[in-house]
Length: 145
Image (cartoon, rainbow, N blue to C red; front, side, top):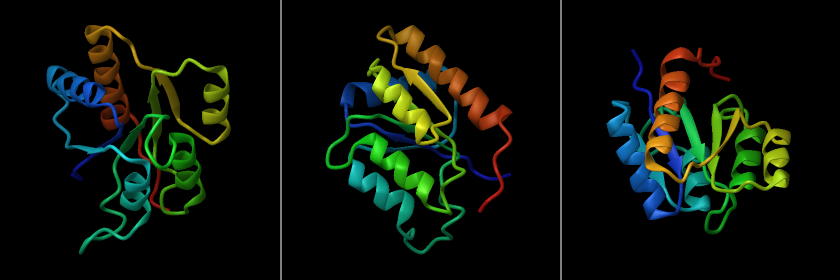
């Protein structure tokens, strides 16, 4: 069985902590990799992993915020979809933005799901639990490109 990683691309320390707490509360035991900068996220996803097999290093799902330092979330999504190695990787936009433009742009660029972050911790924990259940257990992963 492969080890399924979750990549959280988020720069807000409070939201990172909420996601970590929600995963623990929901008993999602998968490794959570946190990257707080858009350029670092691109380097992680599109650059060669140090001493590893490129394909095995990819996360099973990416939780992507839109407002990030250096490279915004929609540009990260565009780069993921433009790269043959990552184009099929599930990406969930997890953002506080309720802008219709962001929602439309995310789907135009091929996001798999768009979730507005709930303010209440219990709602947020429930959303993270459902994300973990669906993307890590129920969803049939696409073949590696």
